[in-house]
Length: 92
Image (cartoon, rainbow, N blue to C red; front, side, top):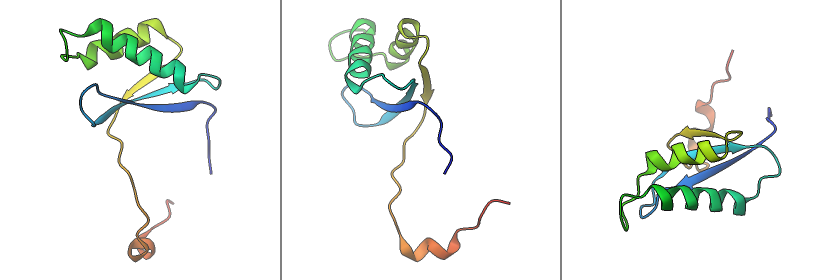
């Protein structure tokens, strides 16, 4: 298995369960650090109470933490389904 040095955190949008952003940080950044940074960014870019601007929040987060990388993504959960196991084809 190939691994890179770093950590990935998934940021949830405020008020909805869809996961849209992944943050890649260096090792040593805690979940609490990322929670505080994302909460700050959402709070101070909101257009009103319960009106977050997630795009602006992502930009502010990177301005405040330029060593972090942010990816807009959709995170899918993949379960084991043994009926599909024989359909796997290795990459050439």
